[in-house]
Length: 174
View 1 (cartoon, rainbow, N blue to C red):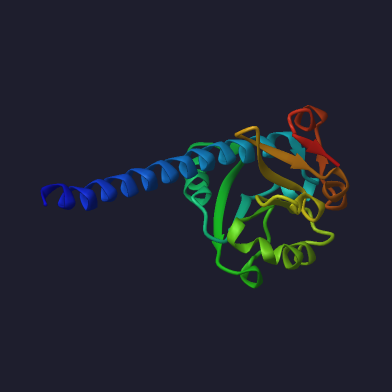
View 2 (spheres, one colour):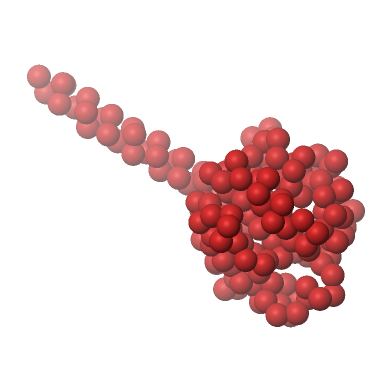
């Protein structure tokens, strides 16, 4: 009878430890993505008019990346521009920004994001396989490692230029 009571306790700890590992993996990935995003700001050139005021990064959807970007905002800048991180719950509420990150839970709305920023100097970043065709940069996991894909044509369409050294680190460039 005692062994029967131990099973739920063991299952509880297995479930909690599994959740913790998934949560830690998500947080680690968020830190890596935040570092990538910071480096994107260093290797992508925006037009002169975008180099004044705050450097605004928008996040649409739910993701642990938002908190990591807030930490980045506190400790670093893009040249003379302080970072300003904004969270949006819907595509319709997105304001102007230099970069917009579309979280996985909002990836079905990528077409609306692309339409909203057509012809504007906004880098569109996503994180779902297959979205590189529509956006500018897409985060992917390849060989169990976080990486990213680049769509040079879409980036150029936003009047942005990308350093070849950044392209060399991409898992795919189209």
